[in-house]
Length: 304
Image 1 (cartoon, rainbow, N blue to C red):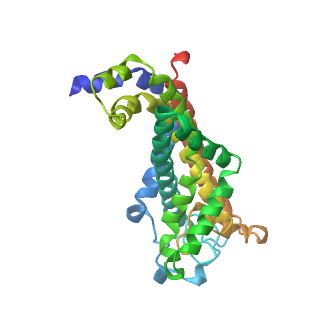
Image 2 (cartoon, rainbow, N blue to C red):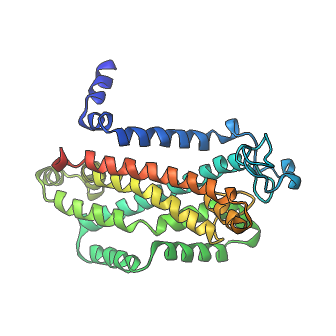
Image 3 (spheres, helix red, strand yellow):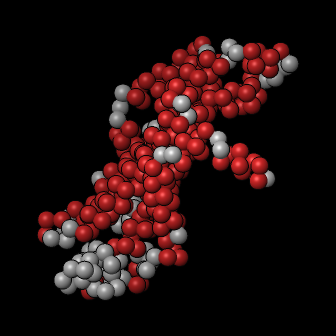
Protein backbone atom coordinates (compact mmCIF):
# COMPACT_ATOMS: atom_id res chain seq x y z
CA UNK A 1 0.00 0.00 0.00
CA UNK A 2 2.79 2.40 0.92
CA UNK A 3 4.68 1.55 -2.27
CA UNK A 4 1.60 2.44 -4.33
CA UNK A 5 1.22 5.73 -2.51
CA UNK A 6 4.92 6.46 -2.98
CA UNK A 7 4.67 5.64 -6.68
CA UNK A 8 1.66 7.91 -7.06
CA UNK A 9 3.44 10.68 -5.15
CA UNK A 10 6.47 10.40 -7.45
CA UNK A 11 4.40 10.30 -10.66
CA UNK A 12 4.91 13.00 -13.29
CA UNK A 13 1.57 14.66 -12.62
CA UNK A 14 2.15 14.88 -8.86
CA UNK A 15 5.69 16.14 -9.42
CA UNK A 16 4.30 18.86 -11.66
CA UNK A 17 1.67 19.70 -9.04
CA UNK A 18 4.18 19.96 -6.19
CA UNK A 19 6.41 22.26 -8.21
CA UNK A 20 3.62 24.60 -9.33
CA UNK A 21 2.82 27.25 -6.68
CA UNK A 22 -0.21 28.38 -8.70
CA UNK A 23 -1.65 24.86 -8.76
CA UNK A 24 -1.02 24.30 -5.05
CA UNK A 25 -2.51 27.67 -4.11
CA UNK A 26 -5.54 27.17 -6.37
CA UNK A 27 -6.11 23.71 -4.94
CA UNK A 28 -5.94 25.01 -1.36
CA UNK A 29 -8.43 27.79 -2.14
CA UNK A 30 -10.75 25.36 -3.92
CA UNK A 31 -10.65 22.95 -0.95
CA UNK A 32 -11.64 25.82 1.35
CA UNK A 33 -14.50 26.78 -0.99
CA UNK A 34 -15.71 23.17 -1.21
CA UNK A 35 -15.54 22.70 2.55
CA UNK A 36 -17.40 25.95 3.21
CA UNK A 37 -20.07 25.02 0.66
CA UNK A 38 -20.75 21.37 1.44
CA UNK A 39 -20.27 21.71 5.20
CA UNK A 40 -22.51 24.78 5.33
CA UNK A 41 -25.25 23.07 7.40
CA UNK A 42 -22.62 22.32 10.06
CA UNK A 43 -20.45 25.44 10.11
CA UNK A 44 -22.65 28.27 8.80
CA UNK A 45 -23.74 30.71 11.56
CA UNK A 46 -27.38 30.64 10.36
CA UNK A 47 -29.67 28.74 8.02
CA UNK A 48 -30.70 31.34 5.43
CA UNK A 49 -33.34 29.00 3.97
CA UNK A 50 -35.27 28.77 7.25
CA UNK A 51 -37.83 31.56 6.91
CA UNK A 52 -38.81 31.24 10.57
CA UNK A 53 -35.45 32.58 11.70
CA UNK A 54 -35.47 35.68 9.47
CA UNK A 55 -36.11 39.07 10.97
CA UNK A 56 -36.92 41.93 8.60
CA UNK A 57 -35.65 44.31 11.27
CA UNK A 58 -32.14 43.04 10.51
CA UNK A 59 -32.48 43.65 6.77
CA UNK A 60 -29.77 45.62 4.93
CA UNK A 61 -27.42 45.65 7.90
CA UNK A 62 -23.86 46.59 6.82
CA UNK A 63 -20.80 44.41 7.57
CA UNK A 64 -19.76 44.21 11.20
CA UNK A 65 -16.75 46.54 10.83
CA UNK A 66 -18.85 49.40 9.41
CA UNK A 67 -20.95 51.89 11.35
CA UNK A 68 -24.37 50.43 12.08
CA UNK A 69 -23.23 46.85 11.59
CA UNK A 70 -24.36 44.04 13.91
CA UNK A 71 -21.77 41.95 15.73
CA UNK A 72 -23.69 38.77 14.79
CA UNK A 73 -23.52 39.38 11.03
CA UNK A 74 -19.91 39.42 9.84
CA UNK A 75 -20.65 40.37 6.22
CA UNK A 76 -23.98 42.09 6.86
CA UNK A 77 -27.45 41.02 5.70
CA UNK A 78 -29.55 41.18 2.55
CA UNK A 79 -33.00 42.68 2.02
CA UNK A 80 -34.66 39.70 3.77
CA UNK A 81 -32.49 39.91 6.88
CA UNK A 82 -30.45 36.84 5.92
CA UNK A 83 -26.89 36.58 7.18
CA UNK A 84 -24.86 37.17 4.03
CA UNK A 85 -21.97 34.90 5.06
CA UNK A 86 -24.36 31.98 5.58
CA UNK A 87 -26.20 32.79 2.35
CA UNK A 88 -22.90 32.76 0.41
CA UNK A 89 -21.93 29.39 1.86
CA UNK A 90 -25.31 27.82 1.05
CA UNK A 91 -25.41 29.59 -2.32
CA UNK A 92 -21.96 28.29 -3.25
CA UNK A 93 -23.17 24.77 -2.52
CA UNK A 94 -26.07 25.20 -4.96
CA UNK A 95 -23.77 26.70 -7.60
CA UNK A 96 -21.31 23.81 -7.23
CA UNK A 97 -24.11 21.22 -7.38
CA UNK A 98 -25.36 22.74 -10.62
CA UNK A 99 -21.84 22.98 -12.04
CA UNK A 100 -20.82 19.42 -11.15
CA UNK A 101 -24.17 17.89 -12.13
CA UNK A 102 -24.38 19.64 -15.49
CA UNK A 103 -20.77 18.81 -16.39
CA UNK A 104 -21.35 15.16 -15.47
CA UNK A 105 -24.47 15.08 -17.68
CA UNK A 106 -22.69 16.79 -20.58
CA UNK A 107 -19.67 14.50 -20.18
CA UNK A 108 -21.71 11.27 -20.22
CA UNK A 109 -23.83 12.40 -23.17
CA UNK A 110 -20.96 13.90 -25.16
CA UNK A 111 -18.54 11.01 -24.59
CA UNK A 112 -21.20 8.44 -25.52
CA UNK A 113 -22.18 10.22 -28.73
CA UNK A 114 -18.55 10.93 -29.61
CA UNK A 115 -17.60 7.26 -29.22
CA UNK A 116 -20.53 6.10 -31.33
CA UNK A 117 -19.90 8.71 -34.03
CA UNK A 118 -16.16 8.06 -34.24
CA UNK A 119 -16.42 4.27 -34.18
CA UNK A 120 -19.48 3.79 -36.41
CA UNK A 121 -18.77 6.53 -38.95
CA UNK A 122 -20.98 6.89 -41.99
CA UNK A 123 -24.44 8.42 -41.82
CA UNK A 124 -24.72 8.11 -38.04
CA UNK A 125 -21.49 10.05 -37.61
CA UNK A 126 -22.65 12.69 -40.10
CA UNK A 127 -26.01 13.07 -38.35
CA UNK A 128 -24.51 13.47 -34.85
CA UNK A 129 -21.93 15.96 -36.06
CA UNK A 130 -24.49 18.03 -38.00
CA UNK A 131 -26.60 18.27 -34.84
CA UNK A 132 -23.47 19.37 -32.98
CA UNK A 133 -22.69 21.96 -35.67
CA UNK A 134 -26.21 23.39 -35.44
CA UNK A 135 -25.95 23.64 -31.65
CA UNK A 136 -22.56 25.34 -31.91
CA UNK A 137 -24.15 28.11 -33.97
CA UNK A 138 -26.12 29.25 -30.91
CA UNK A 139 -24.68 30.63 -27.66
CA UNK A 140 -24.76 28.10 -24.83
CA UNK A 141 -26.72 30.43 -22.54
CA UNK A 142 -29.39 30.87 -25.22
CA UNK A 143 -29.80 27.09 -25.54
CA UNK A 144 -29.93 26.80 -21.75
CA UNK A 145 -32.65 29.47 -21.64
CA UNK A 146 -34.62 27.61 -24.32
CA UNK A 147 -34.38 24.25 -22.54
CA UNK A 148 -35.21 25.87 -19.21
CA UNK A 149 -38.29 27.56 -20.69
CA UNK A 150 -39.53 24.36 -22.36
CA UNK A 151 -39.04 22.34 -19.17
CA UNK A 152 -40.91 24.89 -17.08
CA UNK A 153 -43.76 24.92 -19.61
CA UNK A 154 -44.09 21.13 -19.53
CA UNK A 155 -43.93 20.78 -15.74
CA UNK A 156 -46.95 21.44 -13.52
CA UNK A 157 -46.91 24.92 -12.01
CA UNK A 158 -46.94 23.66 -8.42
CA UNK A 159 -43.74 21.68 -9.00
CA UNK A 160 -41.66 24.53 -10.43
CA UNK A 161 -39.94 25.43 -7.16
CA UNK A 162 -38.87 21.85 -6.41
CA UNK A 163 -37.74 21.20 -9.99
CA UNK A 164 -35.56 24.29 -10.44
CA UNK A 165 -32.29 22.56 -9.56
CA UNK A 166 -32.69 19.50 -11.85
CA UNK A 167 -34.02 21.73 -14.65
CA UNK A 168 -30.93 23.96 -14.39
CA UNK A 169 -28.63 20.92 -14.46
CA UNK A 170 -30.49 19.56 -17.49
CA UNK A 171 -30.46 22.89 -19.34
CA UNK A 172 -26.77 23.63 -18.79
CA UNK A 173 -25.71 20.02 -19.39
CA UNK A 174 -27.56 19.74 -22.71
CA UNK A 175 -26.04 23.01 -23.89
CA UNK A 176 -22.43 21.85 -23.32
CA UNK A 177 -22.17 18.27 -24.62
CA UNK A 178 -20.87 19.22 -28.06
CA UNK A 179 -17.22 19.86 -27.24
CA UNK A 180 -16.96 16.50 -25.44
CA UNK A 181 -18.49 14.72 -28.43
CA UNK A 182 -16.20 16.42 -30.97
CA UNK A 183 -13.08 15.76 -28.90
CA UNK A 184 -13.91 12.10 -28.26
CA UNK A 185 -14.93 11.55 -31.89
CA UNK A 186 -11.56 12.80 -33.14
CA UNK A 187 -9.63 10.66 -30.66
CA UNK A 188 -11.78 7.61 -31.42
CA UNK A 189 -11.18 7.93 -35.17
CA UNK A 190 -7.44 7.86 -34.49
CA UNK A 191 -7.55 4.98 -31.98
CA UNK A 192 -9.94 2.64 -33.83
CA UNK A 193 -7.35 1.95 -36.53
CA UNK A 194 -4.68 0.79 -34.08
CA UNK A 195 -3.65 -2.80 -33.57
CA UNK A 196 -5.23 -3.35 -30.14
CA UNK A 197 -8.67 -2.46 -31.53
CA UNK A 198 -8.17 -4.75 -34.52
CA UNK A 199 -7.10 -7.53 -32.16
CA UNK A 200 -10.26 -7.02 -30.11
CA UNK A 201 -12.34 -7.42 -33.27
CA UNK A 202 -10.48 -10.60 -34.20
CA UNK A 203 -11.21 -12.29 -30.85
CA UNK A 204 -14.90 -11.53 -31.25
CA UNK A 205 -15.45 -8.50 -29.03
CA UNK A 206 -18.69 -6.65 -29.78
CA UNK A 207 -18.58 -2.98 -30.83
CA UNK A 208 -20.03 -1.96 -27.45
CA UNK A 209 -17.31 -3.87 -25.59
CA UNK A 210 -14.61 -2.37 -27.80
CA UNK A 211 -15.89 1.16 -27.20
CA UNK A 212 -16.36 0.74 -23.45
CA UNK A 213 -13.31 -1.38 -22.54
CA UNK A 214 -10.69 -0.44 -25.13
CA UNK A 215 -11.42 2.94 -26.69
CA UNK A 216 -12.92 4.79 -23.73
CA UNK A 217 -9.86 4.56 -21.41
CA UNK A 218 -7.65 5.88 -24.20
CA UNK A 219 -9.75 8.96 -25.05
CA UNK A 220 -10.54 10.20 -21.53
CA UNK A 221 -7.41 12.33 -21.02
CA UNK A 222 -8.53 15.42 -22.97
CA UNK A 223 -12.09 14.95 -21.69
CA UNK A 224 -11.00 15.27 -18.05
CA UNK A 225 -9.24 18.54 -18.82
CA UNK A 226 -12.29 19.92 -20.64
CA UNK A 227 -14.55 18.78 -17.80
CA UNK A 228 -12.44 20.51 -15.16
CA UNK A 229 -12.51 23.81 -17.02
CA UNK A 230 -16.20 23.45 -17.89
CA UNK A 231 -17.16 23.22 -14.22
CA UNK A 232 -16.23 26.89 -13.91
CA UNK A 233 -18.09 27.69 -17.13
CA UNK A 234 -21.21 25.88 -15.88
CA UNK A 235 -21.10 27.76 -12.57
CA UNK A 236 -20.91 31.06 -14.46
CA UNK A 237 -23.79 30.00 -16.73
CA UNK A 238 -25.92 29.18 -13.69
CA UNK A 239 -25.02 32.53 -12.16
CA UNK A 240 -26.00 34.29 -15.39
CA UNK A 241 -29.33 32.45 -15.55
CA UNK A 242 -30.06 33.24 -11.90
CA UNK A 243 -29.07 36.87 -12.47
CA UNK A 244 -31.58 36.99 -15.34
CA UNK A 245 -34.27 35.67 -13.01
CA UNK A 246 -34.72 32.16 -14.47
CA UNK A 247 -32.44 30.34 -12.04
CA UNK A 248 -32.75 29.60 -8.35
CA UNK A 249 -35.55 31.42 -6.48
CA UNK A 250 -34.90 34.02 -3.79
CA UNK A 251 -35.97 31.51 -1.12
CA UNK A 252 -33.02 29.24 -2.05
CA UNK A 253 -30.51 31.65 -3.56
CA UNK A 254 -27.41 30.63 -5.44
CA UNK A 255 -24.51 33.04 -5.83
CA UNK A 256 -26.09 34.38 -9.03
CA UNK A 257 -29.38 35.01 -7.26
CA UNK A 258 -27.61 36.86 -4.44
CA UNK A 259 -25.82 39.06 -6.97
CA UNK A 260 -29.14 39.82 -8.69
CA UNK A 261 -30.75 40.73 -5.37
CA UNK A 262 -27.84 42.96 -4.43
CA UNK A 263 -27.88 44.67 -7.82
CA UNK A 264 -31.24 46.23 -6.92
CA UNK A 265 -29.66 47.88 -3.88
CA UNK A 266 -26.20 48.64 -5.27
CA UNK A 267 -26.82 52.30 -6.05
CA UNK A 268 -28.63 52.94 -2.78
CA UNK A 269 -25.45 52.17 -0.82
CA UNK A 270 -25.94 48.51 0.17
CA UNK A 271 -22.95 47.39 -1.89
CA UNK A 272 -22.07 44.37 0.25
CA UNK A 273 -25.05 42.32 -1.00
CA UNK A 274 -23.51 42.23 -4.49
CA UNK A 275 -19.78 42.58 -3.83
CA UNK A 276 -19.27 39.69 -1.42
CA UNK A 277 -21.21 37.03 -3.41
CA UNK A 278 -19.52 38.32 -6.57
CA UNK A 279 -16.09 38.03 -4.95
CA UNK A 280 -16.88 34.49 -3.77
CA UNK A 281 -17.95 33.55 -7.31
CA UNK A 282 -14.78 35.03 -8.83
CA UNK A 283 -12.48 33.27 -6.34
CA UNK A 284 -14.16 29.89 -6.84
CA UNK A 285 -14.24 30.09 -10.64
CA UNK A 286 -10.68 31.40 -10.85
CA UNK A 287 -9.30 28.59 -8.70
CA UNK A 288 -11.06 25.98 -10.87
CA UNK A 289 -9.80 27.60 -14.08
CA UNK A 290 -6.22 27.75 -12.81
CA UNK A 291 -6.35 24.09 -11.80
CA UNK A 292 -7.76 23.22 -15.22
CA UNK A 293 -4.93 25.11 -16.94
CA UNK A 294 -2.35 23.29 -14.83
CA UNK A 295 -3.97 19.91 -15.55
CA UNK A 296 -3.99 20.62 -19.29
CA UNK A 297 -0.27 21.42 -19.21
CA UNK A 298 0.58 18.49 -16.92
CA UNK A 299 -1.16 15.96 -19.19
CA UNK A 300 0.38 17.37 -22.37
CA UNK A 301 3.41 15.19 -23.23
CA UNK A 302 4.80 17.89 -25.53
CA UNK A 303 5.35 20.20 -22.54
CA UNK A 304 7.23 17.69 -20.40
